[in-house]
Length: 504
Ligand SMILES: NC(=O)C1=CN([C@@H]2O[C@H](COP(=O)(O)OP(=O)(O)OC[C@H]3O[C@@H](n4cnc5c(N)ncnc54)[C@H](OP(=O)(O)O)[C@@H]3O)[C@@H](O)[C@H]2O)C=CC1
Ligand SMILES: O=C1O[C@H](COP(=O)(O)O)[C@@H](O)[C@H](O)[C@H]1O
Image (cartoon, rainbow, N blue to C red; front, top):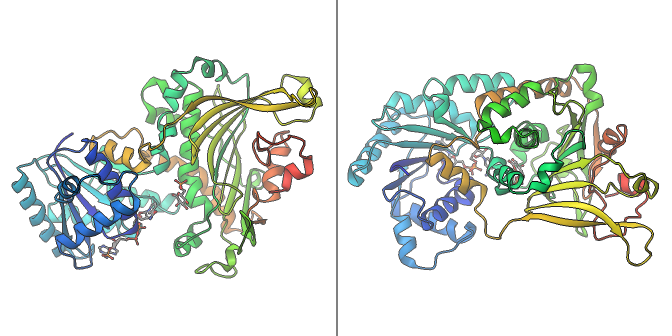
C-alpha cells in the first residue's frame, strides 16, 4: 500500500468513533497500513493532538473487535494521528490544514497521496470539495481520492447536482461512495461461495428459480436519529441504496455475470434492465408501512409517531416492500421481492432464493417450500439449503432440515475495515459507482413522486411483527410467501395459513 495522508472531516463524530477508528486500528495491527500512514482529524471543536489521540484510544476500547494486547502497539497506532481545527465553511481553515498536511508529509518523507474522507453531514459535501480545490489541498504530486458517506442526494435531481459538484474537483475514479452493505463479508464473498460450491452452481438456473427475496429486517427503531430518519424514511435510508445494491450483487452472481470481472458494468446492466414502475403500477408493487406500539422480545415498544424527535403526524414510512422485475433474458420470469423495515420481529439481512415446486407431495402436505437457498448476510453469516426429510416421530409429515454450505468464522473484519482497505488500495469494486447511483434514483423517483402525491397508502404494523398485511398480499397474489417468516426450521411446520400470513 502507498504511503498517504488520511484527512478525516468529522473526526469527532459518531461514525468516526464507532467505525472508522476501529477499522484503522484493526488494519494497523494486521500490518495492512503503510508504515508511513498519517491521519489528520478535523472538526470545529478545539482539541490538542493528545486529547484527540485519547478519544481515538477510547473508541478502540469501546468499539473495536480487537482490543490492544500491548501498550506499545496502541502508542505506535496513536502516533499517526494529528488534529486540526477546521470549520468546513471557512476557506482560511483549509489553508492552515494544507500547512499541517505539508508539514506531516515532509516529516514522514512521504509522497503527496491524499485520501479525503467526508464523515460529515451531506449538506457539507459540496462546500468541502469546493474548498479542497480552492485551497490547493487537492493539487498533489501523488494521487488524491475522496470517500463519501451516504446519503448521496435525496432524489434524482439533488443526486445529479451533488455529483456535478463533486466532479468539479474529483474524477469518477477518484470517488469512493461507501455503501457499507457492500463491505459485509458475505456480500464480498458471494462469488467465492458460488465458485467454490459446485452444488450451488447447478442450482443457479433461471428455469429452476421461482423467486428471489431480499430482506433487511431490523428490530431497532429510530434510536437517536429521528431528525434524519423522519426526513428520509425506509425508501431513502435503505431501499434506494443498500437494498438495490444487494439486488445488483445477487443478480450478477446468480446469472453468472459476477465472474466476468467487470462488476460495475454488470451491475449497471442490471439497473438498466430493471423494469420502470409506471404511476398506475406503483400501488400494486410497493407497500409502505409505519410501526405502531407493540412488543419486541417480551418488552413493550412505542409506536413511531411517539418516538422522540418524530412529528406526531409523521407520514414517513418505516417499512417498505416491493416487487421488481429485471427484463433481461435470465431474469425476465423471476419476481424479486424486497423488504426492509424498523421494529420488526428479528434482525436479519438475508437473500432467499426459492426454487420451483416440483413435488406435488409437498403441496399436498401444505408445508413451506422445501427448496430454498438462504444466504444469511448479518448478523448470522451462513449459507444453507433447506430440504425436507421425514419427521422421525410420525413418519408422515416432512420437516425442513438445513444443509449448511458455508458458514463464516467469528471475528471477521467489519464492513468498514474491508471498504477502507479497498479505498486505500484504490480498488473501487465494492463501492457505488455514479452510474448505479443515478440509475437507482431514476428507478426510485416515481415512488417518491407517488408518495408526495399521496398515491400509496401508509399501512400500520405492530412493532415486533413481520410488517403490514400488504407485504404478504404482495407475494400471495403471485402464489408466493415470505419464505422464512413464522417458520423456524426447528419448529413444527404446522402453522396455519392465517397465522403464517399475518402473525408476527
Ligand atoms: N453514525 C452512523 O452510524 C452513520 C453515519 N453515516 C453518515 O456519516 C456522516 C457522519 O455521521 P455522524 O458521524 O453520525 O455525524 P455526527 O453528527 O456524529 O458528527 C458530525 C461531525 O461533523 C463535524 N462538523 C459538524 N459541523 C461542522 C462544521 N461546520 N465544520 C467542521 N466540522 C463539522 C462534527 O465535529 P465538530 O462538532 O467538532 O465540528 C462531527 O465531527 C453523515 O453523512 C452520516 O449520514 C452513514 C452511515 C451510518
Ligand atoms: O445505513 C443504515 O444501515 C443500518 C443497518 O445496517 P446494519 O449493518 O446494522 O444492518 C440502518 O439501521 C440505518 O438506519 C441505515 O442508515
